[in-house]
Length: 364
Image (cartoon, one colour):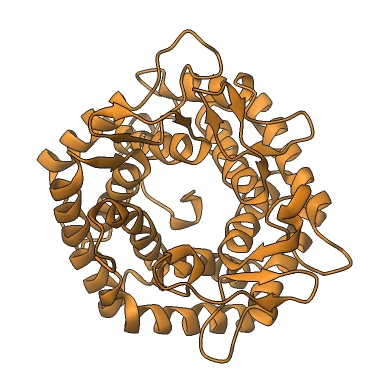
């Protein structure tokens, strides 16, 4: 089999098409480009639009475009990117958590990184300079507005840009190793602009996270909340990928895969998130390609079988093709989730093309 055949963009099982139809036709993306945080199947309504989720969706739509070369995915990604540009608060010089309602009062460090990377993903294909400049605005806000002298505050209240008090019991409201995923935006901008300041920012955050990550798991006494922390810890492992050739990062990835897999085995009968399985599979594949941890094929195949069960086959277009957020006690939770769908789709695509080279910049 030639490399070009092995790395074909054609998906053998129609996964790309089914996921793509969900993103385009489910109503999860509004006509203005904004994307809802999730669809509540029991209440039959979308949650509010989110700038972070719009960013994730834009990145996923670009993956779908690269998978299929269908321009409708590119158009939808550009629409999402334009929504993000319009959401930027020119008075506060900040990206709000939500473009409308009370969500405009807050800005999140992590969200800024996800949004910046999404804008860069669309910019690489269409070349719109506003996408690049807005990505830089988000990245510069991360550096200037969130740093408290030692760590990066997770949430600011606008317009004062004052940090909210940290809540140690809630990982998303405290600084932590998971923030390294957002720091990938700085690394990407360094590669694009050659501005060494961005690389220095990524390296500073890398050192902070490497020094503190071991205490992140389990990090809490309630077992069900540990599953949520696995999702966040996998963000940390993803954030290490640019430095996978460095021993500290390689060791953290190899050890982290084993730790996460152990917790998943322990907790999955009670509560299992589809995005955790997808993230774990993606990191397994990167670790194998990077030569730091051989792929456990048996474990990966079990994870894939479970992942496929999370994809909806409901005839309702609001559900069909998307991936459910999670399962509690064997029952699917009523959250049809665009981020879960994005991660699960990419993980399964990576598995289908596991002989192809992997680029961390393409990781959603």
